[in-house]
Image 1: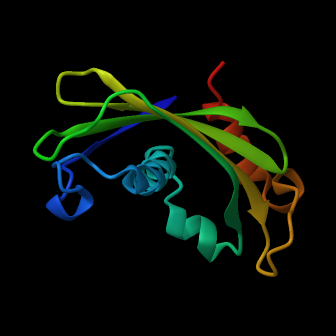
Image 2: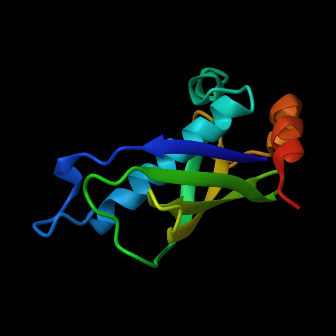
Image 3: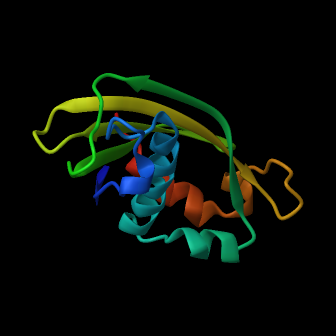
Length: 137
């Protein structure tokens, strides 16, 4: 499954040249991940209410073209790797002309309330099955 979110960059997210600052993309990735969870029927706050967390352990970003203030942005998110403990999301970021301007991945680990890695298959089998269904092949 692919999830999409539209973002209108704020002026505060730009540098002096009117280009979106590189530090904003990880924030957009997080927004896209939260939207992905909502789209599959498990809003992020419900995951946390069940005593489960996700910690980022790795992130890669590839800046292809600059994004400018005044351009709407689209982030397309997909789940590309999934195990009982970890998962990897891929992000494709497009400008208003539908040009690919940024790509990234994030790797996350399932955690319990004590911040210890857990096997989501054993701890919450339903969550495991829901995410496994979304895996892009």
